[in-house]
Image (cartoon, rainbow, N blue to C red; front, side, top):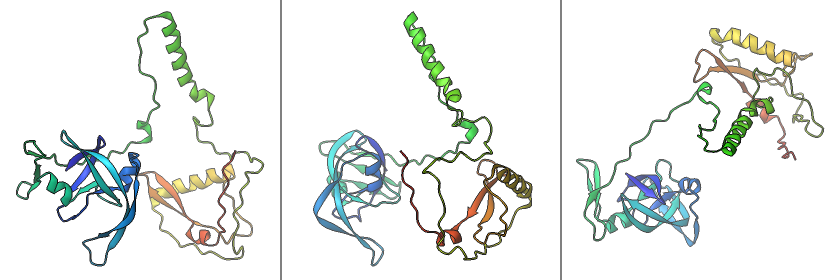
Length: 274
C-alpha cells in the first residue's frame, strides 16, 4: 500500500499479524529527518522465525495521510528491510480495515468518514545513466525586463561556464598520466606487518577481448610512474582482474585483489587535511 508519512510517500505493508504496535523503518526516519524519542523500557519484538527476536528502544510521532484523511500516530522504530512502515493491528483496528484477498485490496473507514480503498504500491523501475548522459547544469533562459537584469544574467551565465576554465584540474579534457606532486606531511607509506611475507596471488582467467586493453593499461601506468617493474621481484604484489563495464560491456573495468596484502598491512587511518 502507499501512505504518506509526514507528507513523504512510504512503502507500506499491512500486516494484522503485527500485534500491539505499528513499525517504521529507521532508515526512513534518518532519510526524512524524523526525530526519535527514547522509550523508558525497551520493547521485545518477536519475529515469525523461531528463535528470532530483537529489542526496540525508540519511537516517533508522525502524521499519517490515508489518501486525504490525516491523523497523528505513534510508531516504533525498527530495522525494516523491504518496507518503510508496517501497519499492525492497532492502526488496522482503529481504521476498521478490511483485507480482500480476492482482489488484493485493503479498504478502511476512518471515524465519521465513508469507507474507501487504499492505493496499491507501484514500484518505479530504477534507471541507469551513463557518463555521457550526465551533463553540467546551466541556468535556464531568463527574459530580462531591464538593463540591470541583462547584465546580471550575463554575468551569472559567464561565471558558470568559466568553471571549466577556472578549475582545469577538476574538469580535464584528457586523462592525466602523471602522478600529482607530493605535498609535505601528506606522503603515505603502506606499513607491512611482515615485509618478508611472500604473497602468491591466485591466477585469474583473462578474457581475450580484454588482453589488448590490459597491455595498454600497463603501458600507461608505467609511463605515469604509478606502477613499475621491481628488481628483485616484489613478493607483496596483488592480482589484477577485469570485469565488463555496465554501460560499455566491451570495455574492461580494472580491479585489484588486495585481500591478501590487506591482511599483512597495519591499519593507518589518515588524518583529515587542513
